[in-house]
Length: 69
Image (tube, rainbow, N blue to C red):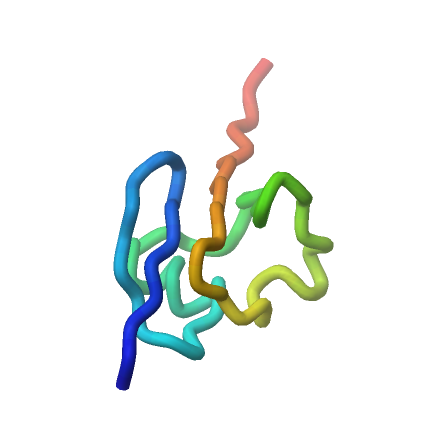
């Protein structure tokens, strides 16, 4: 399978073509709970974010929400 190049939180990575955001989170060992996902400067709606297919050149920002007070 061929690979594509994406940028995740400022770090360039090669991933297999056809992978989703869910696959990326699994690869990075990041639980999908409490994560906001931005793709190419636009936040992905939570109901669609994990199933979004990554494209060559995508810029992904992962922001983890931390509770506190």
